[in-house]
Image (cartoon, rainbow, N blue to C red):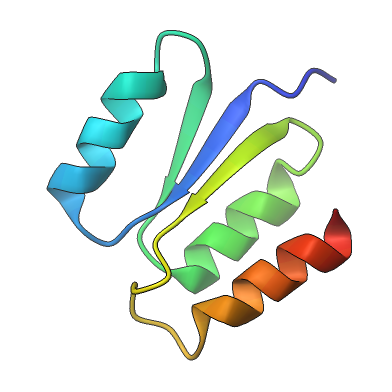
Length: 74
């Protein structure tokens, strides 16, 4: 499967929409409002995700844990 998807973790709707608009012509864009939703999407689409854009300030226990998880899973 081709890596043709961008996953955006962003709580702000306007920011998320702008980012999606930038990439939608070349990539499939998945959007997550929070850590839980984003990790679910990441698991479901892991083989097609090329890039993850993560706002480390979104509400969550610790979004640096998300980064650690991504790093561990390559």
